[in-house]
Image (cartoon, rainbow over all chains, first blue to last red):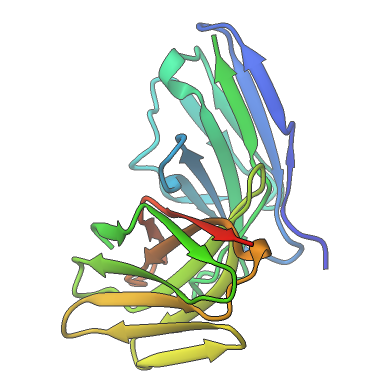
Length: 114
Length: 113
């Protein structure tokens, strides 16, 4: 079974530029999560989707971050404009259905904002 | 969950010894407690989990114990090997529809050959 796929794996941008990350969850997984992991810390939830609807985006800095999952499969996370403090690893995770806690993570995208 | 505290932040053990990592949680509604292993440059990998109706779970060299009264749970790794070296994260979830995970800050485990 293929795991969660993410791209790109690394991205370096200047502050105030925009960037987008892509995630393809495990086939059949209805729930998709985006996390931000700052160096030396645990992952912090940004947004949770169930199929193509948003379950919780209370931790998403909506003035600069946006995310979508239009067809209920792939998802993109965008930052515009980026700030220095956005430097982190952005992790995507998926779970089989809303009634389960077990989440499977992708390899992440390491973002460096200069 | 609301808050998860994890200790220690770093742990060094000799190969073959045991390693124990402890976490405490604050949310009384928490009922699911997974442990993830994260190697350098990779995403977190689920290694074991436990639900609130169970006090202990074991999978080969890895075990997790849960004390709901004290609100703490622990990861035990026996007969450690160099490939166990990684950062380990505990987390909790209260279910309640969203099944969101709250993570601890991680423990960097080094197994010295």
